[in-house]
Image 1 (cartoon, one colour):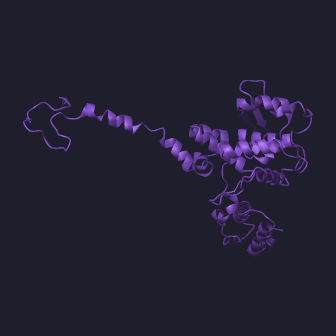
Image 2 (image 1 turned 90 degrees about the vertical axis):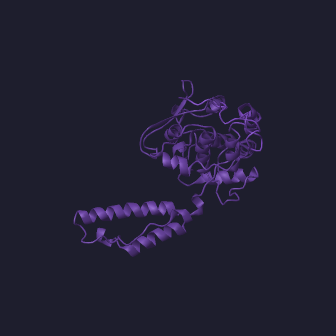
Image 3 (image 1 turned 45 degrees about the vertical axis):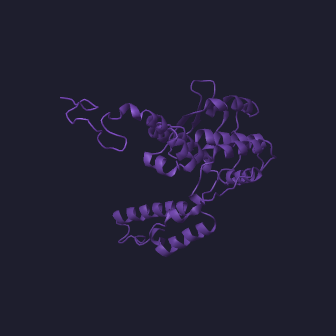
Length: 297
């Protein structure tokens, strides 16, 4: 009954979830939903007072589990090669795990969205080739159609020949049971890639989505386009949360600046003829002489 909703019970329930491995972020989503419900009850005069008013949201920033990182180009190459050469993990063959990672980093799809895909979801012979996630499986509850990069098409076509047309590409309840992250940890370890870097950022399965969106930024994709591909409601989320640019990326960016050495070599072409190199006026020069740069009327 609604009258059983008490702050202490809600706190205890959420604490138990976190003890079982639920993240602070998910716990906060649950609390927000419950508080919206009790606020509605009060507005409908089912409650005299809202019993959850004093409950505050936890700080998601202290949940280090959600500080994810994007894999580097070397790490991606190493991960895919080692996975393909490995053995079955949690019932997934090497090629199935390999294609799962490839599709995740080529589309930014989440584990639950990838788990919903069938052969019919992939349109590889059209222009442009696409992958479709039905509304019931998309996080934003609408049908999503995303383009596929050309470099994965041949591999995908060859792999799809081994798949039954009526089954899901990766069948089973692996997404609900969070097996994707466990499989990835096995393959990361085999590839010698740390799941946590020196900055404390993690490489879980959702980090493959981070890798997809960050690679869009690294390759100069406009923010508005990246936002649409990431299926975000606001570009702020795309820019701040999913595109952490590291020192290496910054170095590549500054290397695109105009070459100053070339500009310095051309500087003598614009030196004022009546001024010495030390900045003083040359002897015998007249202030009445025409300036090096003619003035406009």
